[in-house]
Image (cartoon, rainbow, N blue to C red; front, side, top):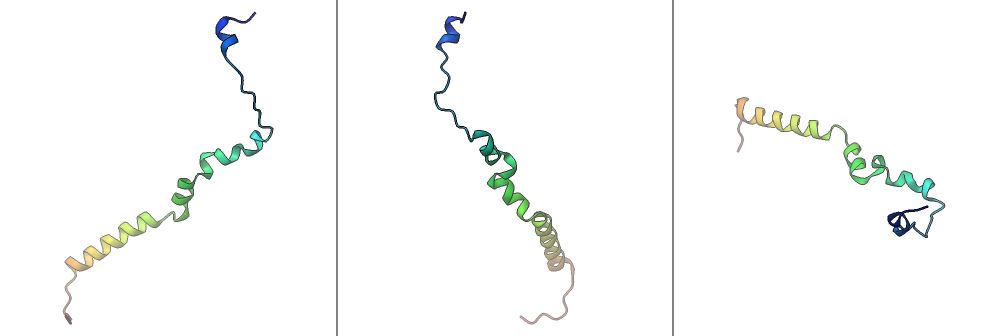
Length: 68
């Protein structure tokens, strides 16, 4: 016999027969943020390396030919 609390809990009336087949869409592997992170995997490291090189070139390399 069910208790009072168990009998008060209602089961959903609507049951989606395709829910198992559509579950992959809610997986975190296929989220938009995951796709953007993996779209350009080396972009962050390359940006930091390029900025470091530009800073080094600007401050530490002597340029003898200054045109402007």
